[in-house]
Image (cartoon, rainbow, N blue to C red; front, top):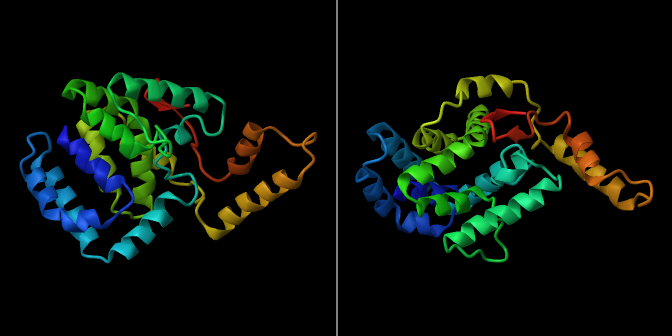
Length: 236
């Protein structure tokens, strides 16, 4: 599904390639027999608006949105396992899944990075790709709701992915659930995390709490729901 490749590229860290090849993106979207005309147009508008800005400004905004705090992280397992030990095994299992389809990762790449996962799905038959999207639909809906709350145009990309998944995840219900979330990307929230990390670093190892307990305490009031149970298509 070339549509998944396009969305994957748009979710990656912006570089000059998008500005140089934007017409190719427009052409590919116009030729799509998978996207509705409305969704194809929405993606075209997203590309147009991005490329009308200076690339450095777009890169800065991207980092502010996806690299500050954890609520809008593009690492899928961040929203499922957090820092628990289950995350490591999930990474191993996903890498094995990639290897079965001939996808070899660079040592710097994390297998649960959403753009990479979309690249993987794009290689599969359409029904299997759709199933892969359905597996992560609760995460996509969560991210869409948070991005809409922040009035980010990137929410469009997640809405398109949810439509491609043909999922029954209730996006409106998800939006209601996160309506009262405290932002975890504010200076105060980031300072609190930094201070906690400093305390943990300098503390006596024999008295330090476990990584998982520290994580749960540190973010308990910051972002909820922090983790999702994607096996049942809903929150845990």
